[in-house]
Every structure is written in C-alpha cells, then in structure tokens.
Image (cartoon, rainbow, N blue to C red; front, top):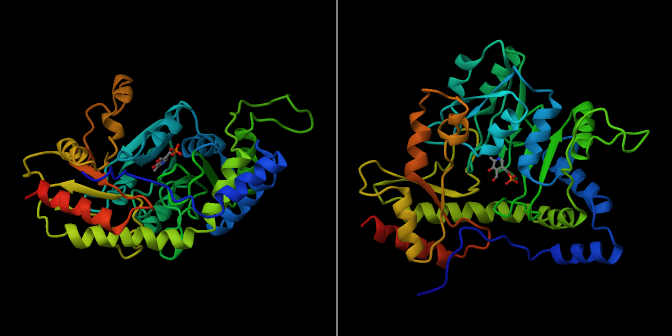
Length: 372
Ligand SMILES: Cc1ncc(COP(=O)(O)O)c(C=O)c1O
C-alpha cells in the first residue's frame, strides 16, 4: 500500500531556513530582535490593521484580547457553540460567561440571526469565529454590535488570506486574533497574532503578553499578565511564510476545487459551500458531513480511511456539550441541533499545502469506495 497521506503538512521551502539561520548567526532567539517587529508590522499591514502583537499561539491571543477589553465576572460574551474551546475558555477563564448560539447547517458558521435574541444587560461582546474556510456574515453582526454598543472580538485563526466582501478577515473586530499552528495558511510552528487599530488596546495587549511589565520600573506590576511572548525564531518562519501567502491561497483553493470535482457525485456526502455572496471558500480544511441515512458516522468513516492510510480529523465538539462546562452547570438543557449533528457526522480530509493532485485523487477514490 502507498504511504500515509497526512491530514496536514506545512510548506517550509521558502526563506524559512535562511531567516532561521540569521537568528542563530545574530543570537536573536528570544522575543527581542528585528524579526518580531518586522513580522508584526507586515502581518498587520496585510490585514489592514495599525497594530500587530505577536504571541505564542492563537488561544493565548484570544485570552489576551478578552482580558484587554476588561471582560470579567458578571459579563456575557456571545459566541458560536461550534468552535474550538479556546474561544469559550478565553471568556470563562476570566470569570465571564460564554453564551452560545447554533451554526448554519450549510456554512457551519455562527447563525448571525440568532444573536440578537441572546443579548442581555450583561452582554459585553460578540465573538464571531470564522469556520473552516468561509467568513461569518460580518455586516449584520457589526450592525447588531453597533446598535447594542457591544465590542467585537473577531477570531480569524483559520482565515489568513481570506476576505469578507473584499476586506481582509481580521480587519473587522475591535480586536481580532489569528493562529499560526502548522495547519494554518501561515505557520510559525506554534504562534498567534492580535491585531487592532486601537492604540490603547494594542498597548494593553503588549503589556498582557509580557507579564504586564511596565515602565519606568521593570518587575513592578499593577496587573497580572502572562508570558505569551513569541520567539524571534517563530517570527522568522512566519515572515518567510507570509512572503508566500499569495501563492498559498490559490493552492488551497485548487485543493478545494479538485476534491469538490471528484466528490460531488456522492449523494450521502455534504460538501463545503464553494462560495457565498460575500466570500469564496479559502479551504482552511476540506470538511464533509455524512447524511443521516448513511449506515455509519464520522468516527467510523475516519477509522475506515485510517485503514487506507489516509489522515483525517473530526469536526469540533460543541461548547454546550463539553463535559467541563456541563459539570459547571453551564448550558443546562440547551440544544443546538445543527452543531450537534455536524459534530457527529462531520470530519475533514487531508487539506495541507503540500497535498499533491495524486493524493487528492487517492483520497477521493477511497471516499467513493466507502460510500459505494
Ligand atoms: C477558530 C480557532 N480559534 C483558535 C484556535 C487556537 O489556536 P492555537 O492552536 O494556535 O492555540 C484555533 C486553532 O486551530 C482555531 O481553529
């Protein structure tokens, strides 16, 4: 049998090695040094923001972003139930309450129409999270936020290089965040970025990522921060990756189109939406959802594909079904059928930047066998 097709593999064939060697040659390996500043500046410019604050991962970016908005006990933040726990954890860790809403059955993004009915006097912010390849419908969401005087924390972790109505994702929140985990369009191994146009928020985030160290006297603190710093070596890789983003985006779209071409005749498979009126799918990952009448669920399909040496990942598990939140009495009796369904029937196929046409074809053939 041919080799394993991994679910993801980054492309590190640009200037990554050269820039890393510069870190070693110059001794700049900590969070100081020119690569950090350059990566922050270039990344922020790419998403049309004034400030970029590099951090150690996308989850930390969310933690710092929520903290910078002074969200805490007694506050509520509205976010999708279908997302990674980093989003809800950034809220609950600070003693605030995540209020969740269902996702759309086709785009898997948060149902913007459901937001307004969940706003209370305690609501402080909305956290849109762009899922898998398509952005949240931001115009109506921003309008609701404006009307109710709510802050917007935009999680654009999966959307590097994506736009909403031709404006970059990551340019919509009071504060927006990204992840550079290796399955993202730009990777730094582990890493993240906070972006904003607000000088005060940017300054606060810079402090929070660095133990809230403050001039004039180092090691004297008037709040508790974290060590969320990114290293120069990560920034060096990120810079080399960013140089190639305009090459990576079409490559990911090609993967999307080739899968869609080969899989669209499998009736029991729901494929990702290619485009909406506001964006073309950027294929962070190629997700599929198995119809209810198929004789197996996502877990079984992933097992069968693993036997054919094909790597896959399950979809997110909804926040309202997380044991840790259930035990704490959160989301009692709440049901969100779209998220519950896709969590059980959805998974994603190999989607990494190095995926070759022959591999897409082999995965597609294996899917046809599975659903024959
Ligand atoms: C939507 C979303 N938000 C946040 C994160 C967390 O990023 P990280 O893994 O860098 O902590 C991820 C990770 O994949 C994500 O998909």
